[in-house]
Image (tube, rainbow, N blue to C red; front, side):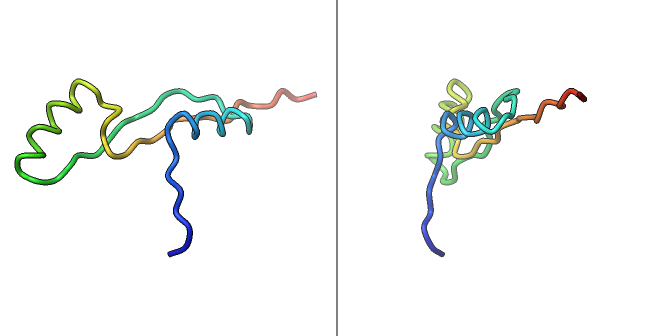
Length: 67
């Protein structure tokens, strides 16, 4: 599979800003599996959604002004 690198939300946001994107927000998603762990994780991630296993960053490239 090759080299795998996991990025934090802050790293992704910094990268997108450096290449000119405006970041509108982060969507935390996903859930954990397992019977007992599922119940505990469900309540914990309702309080702290940033602990969910996946996230998506919503960003846009601002339009360039015509010269």
